[in-house]
Structure formats: structure tokens, C-alpha cells
Image (cartoon, rainbow, N blue to C red; front, side, top):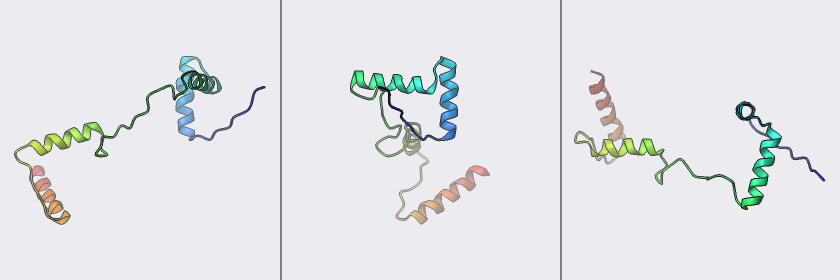
Length: 98
């Protein structure tokens, strides 16, 4: 006996998913059934789940930028307050625009 399952998803997500599924020859119900069958077979989510953020909460690319910038000789700081840091950043951006 088959049971109906209803889900609510964002309109754009559905459009994007339908576009990709059509390209590979599947419809949404078939894709969902495939997912559920694989879930039961593996007894886990059938793909890797991981955060794209580093331990510091940044993307790997942004964290790499920060680390590169902090190793440069012309770095500014340290600062005792956020106001000091903002003031120094404003001075720095004025220099780079000139």
C-alpha cells in the first residue's frame, strides 16, 4: 500500500531542482523515492553532510585571506577597542584609494 507524502519547499528551490532532474531524466517523486530507498539501504543519509564553514565560522577561502593578510608586514593593530580598529581601517582605505 502506498502512502502520500507532502512537503513544502521554496519555489526557487523546486524550480532549480526540477530543471536539473529533467536534464537527467527524473521527476521529483522519482528522485525522492530514490533518496528514500538509498536511505533505507545504507541506514544513513546517502551523501556527505558537512558545514562549509571553518571552526572560526568563516568559509575556507575567507579564512585563508585572513591568514594571508595577518602574515603581511604592513598589518595594522592590535587594537584595544573596536573604535580604534575602525578608525585605523578608515585611514587604511583612504590610503589605498589615493
